[in-house]
Length: 331
Image 1 (cartoon, rainbow, N blue to C red):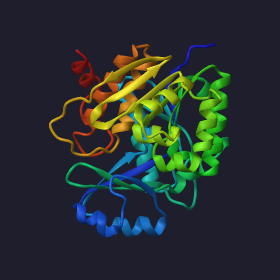
Image 2: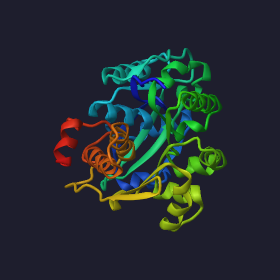
Image 3: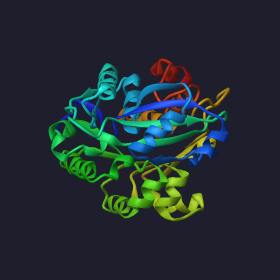
Image 4: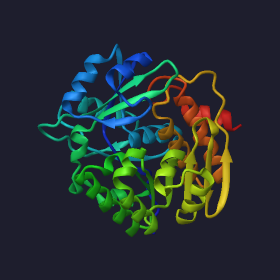
């Protein structure tokens, strides 16, 4: 097996995050699921955007956020996702390439437009996400360059993109390419509602040994295992995954790698400003340590440190020098 030239290549939604502060009352008035994420159509995207206050527009998408963190830490990364030939598509393409991440999928002509996620942030820092998937739902399998996938140590997939038929087929094709090349496959189911819709598929991937590293939070693990008790869920899932990583918000995170359990506390922080991207950056820190061969406990700590930087400000892209920040905290 040849040495990979990329550390991580990811397939995910190419989204622009639109983030605005709001009062709790607006969440109720709009009938949104506070702290959750729901998919919206074009009309809902327009009406919710009209209801937002002054907003910040930042390139996002779960897997793309993880890659941005990895690149800041010093990893070599590539991204596969679909944008449209429009202004937001140009913004996303510029942002991800300027971060040093390889991105070569051609923009798609015509409707639908580039995806966007409308994020309402309440005073406690909780984010309520409303996602219009737009062009990102139309990533075709033929957009994949299998030689690039085979050239990455880890293929990272986000569950959000499992819903539409085209990108789901593309991700299955990518998993097969990574497997043939002897590379690792990392996966996050992204949200409990995604698991509710595709649990059988995810369990099939897990039981079939197609996933080497699984990232989920405790609620997603409960949805996957159908066990509300954390320890029971961990006991049911961990034997099926070489590396299982479960985040628990303020209670830190747990990893079980080849039967050995490691835990980390959440990093102390003065104030939680916005939890958008916390899981994405946790995955970035963990994966960076993982591809560098660090012990699992160190990977967990790096993940926790990266997550703490993200929740200290708005948006899911780090504002500090992430590499220096992690090095300082790791001692």
